[in-house]
Amino acid sequence: MRILITGAAGRLGSALAPRLVEDGHDLVLSDLHAPADYAPSSALGFVAADVRAGGLEDAAAGCDLIVHLPAWHGIHERSRSEADYWRLNVDGTFWMFQAAVARNVKRVVFLSSLAWHSAYGKYGFTKRVGEELCEYYRQNHRISYLAIRPADFTPTSTFLEHGTRLLYGGVDRDDVVAAAVASIDHLARPSNDEPSGTIVNAVRRNAFEAGQVDDWEVDPLAACGRIFGGAAQELVERYGLDIGRRPTVVDPGLGGPSIGYTPTRDFASFIDTLWLLDQSLGLPTVRTLPGP
Ligand SMILES: NC(=O)c1ccc[n+]([C@@H]2O[C@H](COP(=O)([O-])OP(=O)(O)OC[C@H]3O[C@@H](n4cnc5c(N)ncnc54)[C@H](O)[C@@H]3O)[C@@H](O)[C@H]2O)c1
Image 1 (spheres, protein in one colour):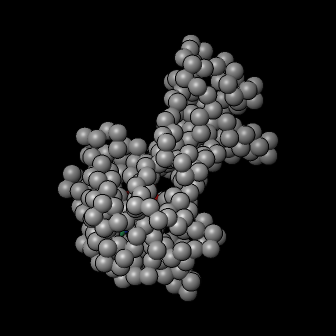
Image 2 (cartoon, helix red, strand yellow; image 1 turned 30 degrees about the vertical axis):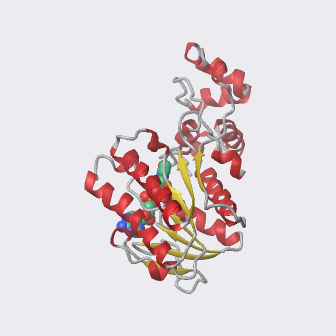
């Protein structure tokens, strides 16, 4: 398929684009500025555009699907105003849909957020309106959409923080890429049905049930050993990982399983990687390794 990625230079877009090229898709990238590693000689097209002002029609011409990413998100709540959020997250999404209508693009993957649930936060509210726009364009312009609600995948300062976050509310960026790929594959399937609207929670794998972590805070290290094994217990102690809070069971929702989204990363997979790094690199390097 020919796919337009808006916000392509950001954290998700820069990981998603190479994966879609590998899968044989033809891409058009768009952002305020070209991605850092973009080579003008590459086969990928790049169109500079500010989504708040419209003007995505050229970029969307000939495309089968748009992946829409630009947004102010959770980490910008202090530095950006309500008006900033509205202009980028809501107006930007509206103008993306206008370009889809103008160029007859019938499939959209919209990056929403789990912050959707905190509906009256500045960020979650704009994602609610964004999902409403998806539904409006489904009903009025027959555009099928997939709205992905990822958990937090913002960069952490170290690899150890990244891994520890996978015990709580975080998700690995690779799993969010997998959710986007599954969404695109789902929308690519031919269908004679009404245009579809699907919501997917892009969350990490659950390695435990709520009942297994009820008494976690009584002795976190022992509970960690019971669930993740002796090696996990040893590594948590050696690297001083902050696992004092009771871990959370995340809600996978219904949309992910229905489109074949299967997350593969969690605290257990992090411990496997940490174990390998620990064996080959030794403690000081692992401690300072930047988060992925
Ligand atoms: N990062 C997370 O933890 C997280 C969690 C949940 C949901 N999300 C959602 O996923 C999406 C992608 O997140 P990300 O982490 O890749 O974001 P990011 O901030 O890394 O990237 C956003 C991109 O949008 C571009 N952009 C900003 N303003 C623009 C404009 N006016 N016109 C065109 N492009 C513009 C930026 O240059 C940037 O390249 C967002 O919609 C975000 O709300 C992210």
